[in-house]
Image (cartoon, rainbow, N blue to C red; front, side, top):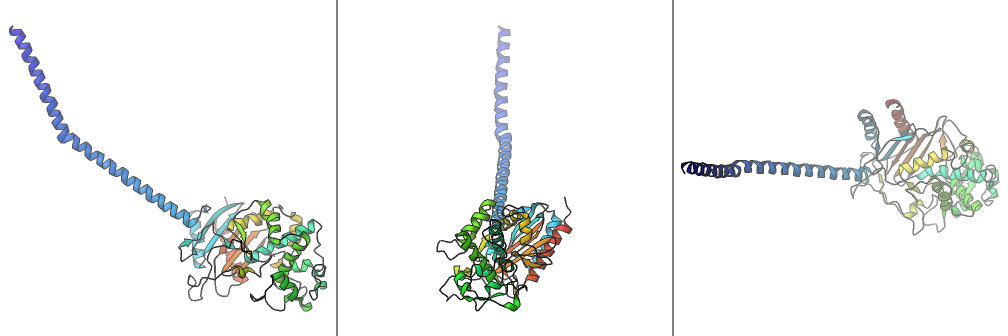
Length: 405
């Protein structure tokens, strides 16, 4: 009996001890462990929230940067190389898009400044710019393509197509391509003239016999060449250009500023900066379809910088006309004009300027290296020399300051 009582007492004590132990453990957990766990949980939750907010801000900043720089931005330069380019562009007050092409690949493509200052819309590689006179390079290639197909000859006199033009029997299409025809206009086209530019130029063009064979830049040459393209192909110039160049090269992001009511005008804003404030956006240029009425065959294409490059490289690669015929078309040297561009021993250059837009291309004749600069701001007293020096300096920085990989 005593043994049984002792056993029961031990069991009771064990039960009571267990209960007390459990109770103490529970109280300890509630008063010590649980607050600590809650504190750790709250800290972990806060850390997660902080991390989320940090990632969200990064994503928002990245989105903003994509909107600013565009989806096609490329930067394969080192920090030092990039600084060289940035400082050069800043010192030249450049806004627009710059594309650097080296050893057959784009190594840098970026937008600078505003496409629309009032709307705070940034320039980027997807921005559209006016080609202006760079378009003449395509008109020239199309003339050579027609020569390849036997539709015309470069030694055809202008009188074969427009006999009413005074002196037209004295000059050839070849001379017109090289701006050595002596063609001029009696007066410039006015917005008051109720006729298209081709009709106007036919009625007002004449040949100055003293200028035949001498270089003199006159856009009337290329307006008439565009008219000849329409004559021999029985097709609208713009449709013919699209069918024979842009479509086979599979390029996108381009358009024509024409007088058609359905034409889609490039919606960027261009600016003219005063001499005392070259970084100013205070003088936006008013642009209407009438601004391009004079530019048949000479300057009413717009596109991205990359589309401009891809088009020119496709031509160099013989995809539109043969390489031999391209060389024959651009047979001038020492910087003289020939076939829509200025030709040098190892590269060609073209410069375009219209309604506040300025575009330049410097491309090596082998097509391995190029600089494209397209801007929606023009400066006081723009000139061929300034534009050529700008792109040449940029090209030299790309080739000399950046080690070849």
